[in-house]
Image (cartoon, rainbow, N blue to C red):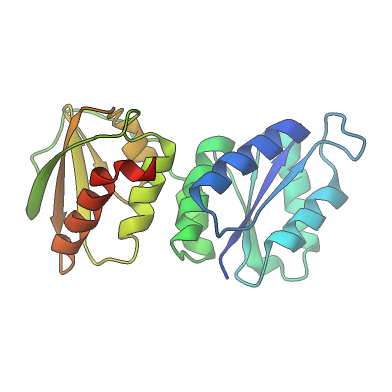
Length: 221
């Protein structure tokens, strides 16, 4: 089982689109869309959100993300009415970025607190690149056409999720924690670009091997 997600939106299509996108990053995570009113018009429906929450929570809990203020109120009410209110939480985060980050964290086996924390991550603010961290390092040329966009970034994060290693990716004067989808995407590394990957810790060599393999097979694209 994994932590589930609920996307609460005033729009049916918006909720379904975000759920579809996040689902591409995390095939084993239950993601439910709760958008619009029962008749398909704009709005948020309490019964629809509560039903989505009950279906998303398979026992490990569920995280709810929302688009606009009144959707937060409905999401909070749904949590209060849930069979186990402590097993669900509403996160104040950009709904698209938050859903993607949360889905990857859930896919990696994160608990409710970890998934909620991932959803609430702020997009990285890049400044001058710090000196490369200590550890083993490898330079790699991205072979897939679009580089580290959403799905490859998510796959990279999932690939090293179980390892005991601190991994940092450097590109074009910027750096990113390799366990953060949003940070990796923020590097804007495209096909043909060279990245430097630095890993430190007991599983550093394995982390570099796994990432190198992903680059070699073009992130399965």
